[in-house]
Image (cartoon, rainbow, N blue to C red; front, side):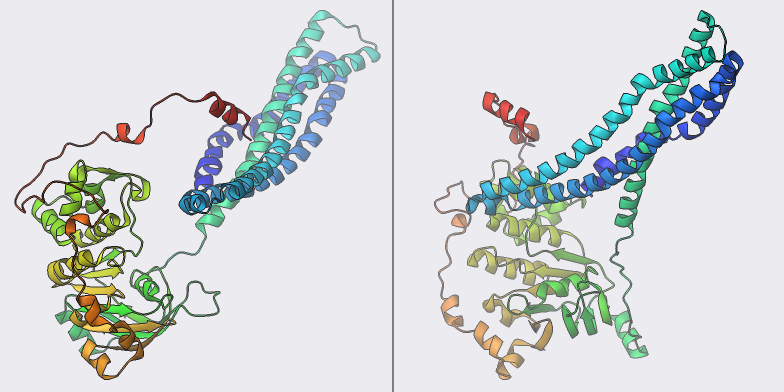
Length: 513
């Protein structure tokens, strides 16, 4: 995507200018040939034929080679950009395992392969431009020789007239037309690449094979404001996939209920949420979630901006609502720790915050958005036990008590407070029901979850002030009604490091491939 926008699309600015020489060149050639004919007679045919033989066959070959090189350059540039994005995304893992040297070799190889093709394309471009130096002189020379061999007398006015007309022909045939041919060849490759990107498979929200609801079901849906219904749903990541990600999923979450989805790693819990969000297409069955949905992802993500901007995420600021969400998501203590409160700047992907800080902000973003259904993908796993208890009691069971909530969690101490438990395993529902029903059925997975229940409940709740880092100190927590106003920080001053560049750094930059 980055390469398409920066390289392929940018080429259309030049091709629109040079394309006009496809019709200007024939017209100008005819006019110039006529005036050369008037000046030297049949010798004009020799000169014009000579300039055509010097330019057209060679330029046709260069155009074909340019198309080939442009295709190779695009592929290798895509590979290099993709490799760099993956390295930047996983740079923490690379640094942790000291894999800098192997990945440096990989980047060096990718750059070398790209530079190799770029060098070939530039050689062709330079060879094409070199024709401009001697094409005019050669054509003028053979025209004058032919004119003299026909028994005519050369004069200065004839030579200077021929020089001017051949200069015009050289400009069109040896410079502008070759550039037009090269630009059109590159534009053709770019069009194919953009077309291939635009014709990729879309995430169509229209569900295949919908189930027609009966009159009783329609009346039920009219009475309820929110809710989730799934009937024999199966889904695949791609149509070519052999195995199904989810198989024969049937469940119903009533409006205002709290549903807990549990299961081992890889059971399909996040894939179930992707079905709700229409990001994973169904192969069969139907699902009814035609209400507003708010989603808190499993991996908390933040963008460059203030903490408040990450919480609001484009929503209008409502002071009372924002204060309630901050309290429910246990963010007041984090704001007290930050130098500028909720106006503190966070870096790319929230690198300046810990995992225990990013998770409540990610949850607050979903909670602040007014929706009917809240999909919470394991928001309690990245926080401490006492913080998780606060989030469950004050936010999930408190602030959102009248909303439909679907919670993915493996925190066994919260399952008793849910209205419905769905057990997933290998993309299938093994069992579902209330906590008491599943305990009565002696389900193995539930027994595993509730083992040592008493021990987890006896855990002493540590101080809320130490949840971010051991030994962190700060002032007392402000009162609920106390509003602390912080100044907006200077983003430029925080993001830019000032100092002098070392000479070795400049040398490495100049010698880098």
